[in-house]
Amino acid sequence: MAKLPSHYQQFRDRFSEIAEAYDEASRLTVEAGPLDAKAVQLVRLAMALGAGYEGAVHSHARRALEAGATAEEVRHVALLGLTTIGFPRTMAGLS
Image (tube, rainbow, N blue to C red):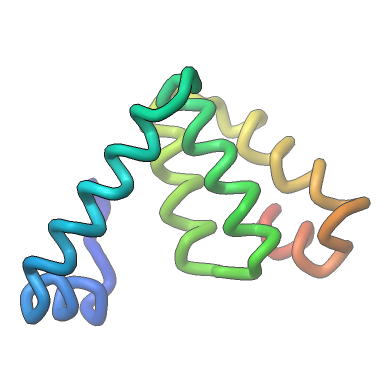
């Protein structure tokens, strides 16, 4: 796993019970539906792109690759945003 940003690690260290509850909520949302791990990460990547959350974009792109997505599939997710989230966010996603 890639090195976590220091502010995120500090949050996890300081508020460990909240971080654990957040992890549990994430696990439960994944298990609530039929999507496999790769699809989950590609969907989360798309949502992060749409919201403009750069850190989440990096995280979910990396996680999608770890779950078996190809670099081409990750780029395709960014490209699909062109007509819904706009050119600037698509370019940010492609970076």
